[in-house]
Length: 197
Image (cartoon, one colour):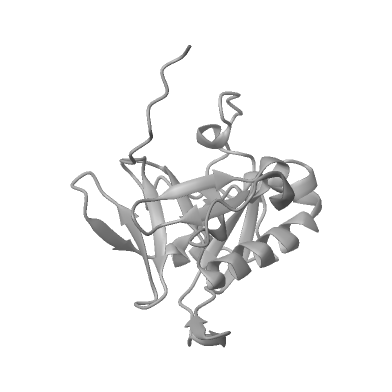
């Protein structure tokens, strides 16, 4: 019989969005959170977004939905909310750990990833296996949803690029330099532009 230890956290490098403060934060080696500005561009591995149940109170508990199908993973408790996990890449913003995980059940972030996925899925670049480089800006105001309020960060797809080898998951793919989306436009962006994210 194998040894089965309980995962008590620690986890890897991550990013998080603070609805209350309207800011993006990243983990650091020292354990504290550092603010960063994703308006300069970040690659989001939206093709591999994983949906699931997330509980944060009393420690993080993430339960993936196999094949992103909620009927294949019963909700573990009333405290578990539907959420997602996605990898983000930027050597410019995340120098020490260029690949970071965004895992959240915030309503506004669920809206954000659903809109981004639907927009990407309609693109021929998505179907060709490319990943989007997006600029994320500050949400203007909170919006009321149900009994609470949230923010949905605005974004713009600035370029499509070959999947960086860091996001290849064991099958390294030659990576094109990531574009600096602050200096390119969606209509004029192409894979021949050499910038750094």
